[in-house]
Image (tube, rainbow, N blue to C red):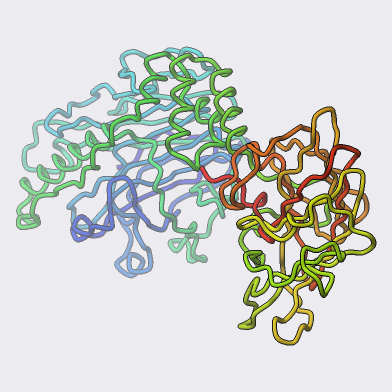
Length: 579
């Protein structure tokens, strides 16, 4: 089968199917086939364009020895070519033939041209084939035939023209738009010679394609379109296989694949029933794709409202980690067809579940790593409580949290000491409150607190690979009285929530965070692991690496009495709020 149509630039792609066993392999599905692509016929360039055209019988006429070395293409879906910018995509579907030379043939083509889908399909049943029968054309699921040509697809610059060279026994369509043109011809035969295969019902497709040379992908992109002439095995040159690939994304719809299956089955069954040498090969049972699941409710709402489903997904993409929230956001947009509805939904969700962010100027800041890799220490056991000598205990001027962690199999204590005078309005508050460590500081004063990880038995410093200190409930009294500031040097960064109420500055290796909103005891956190949006907005996480001690300076503006500073050796802000 040789066509007379020759496009100016030629990179010819051809295909064959080897035997019936491929139909029984469950790994070969209609929507997905892995195979090597071969270019074993004439190739080249002309007019500065890269293209190809041709018949699909790579093994017909080849010697048995050559056929052994050529891995023919098999039954199924193939990628033909993708333009470099992604605007043009072309796929082909191949049916098997039961002939002795085991050739496959292209029976359907699909084109995606800048988002417009054009599909060329064969007759469903080979019995329906007539000479010069109209070619079937689908444009974005709307059905046409070659009798409707020519026309320009509404809303595009794509022209569809009739393509039928004089004297040829086929109908065709030519697609033309900027930087791309393609021909697809459907060869249709039917005459009165009942005993011959070539003189009876038959239908296959030839195709041609031209891409602007600046828009042609590299060979590594698994395109059939290659650079320059190819030395094929027929010419005694090197192999020219393009890399094999698994083309799992089909441009054909589910309905298209079922249509193609019916054609494949009818042709195979017709041919095997007409040829005595093919008796016993059996019927072909094409593996039709499973029906697609029902359209998600939000998608249907978009379709019913005439809204863009793709745009809805773009607006709500930040919520994809939570199916419920993501679908609610999609529905809000699709019902109203209003960008603002989705924007407001996302903003509200971000306020309720703010993400961690790094303060500018940090040399290193990776919230996910801080959340997952830092050592956690607890403050549940207070074995000594006399920080700065203010009590309530006597003895060593420290707060010691016993058995705060186990590091490398050894118990570790957390010990707090002060540098300079420590003024506390209520020393009895110092120590802990549930899972938090507590330091009560008098308004109008400041104190530098050093925290040390030490071996519980020997008291020797214990170096931690990574540790994070979080300060909580950084708020103030009315009219800015008792405004709280925490200044910390030596951390690798400072992490706050996206909805933070804190004013945070990074100078050199020091970070300072200052409260800005008045608070009450009612909004105090109960656990480092169960913060709400307000509580995380008043918290600050400071990560450290390779340290055995770290310090923070706690300061309060003038005000009444004092305020409690809550802390935990936990990466709370870096972990964000769970959804």
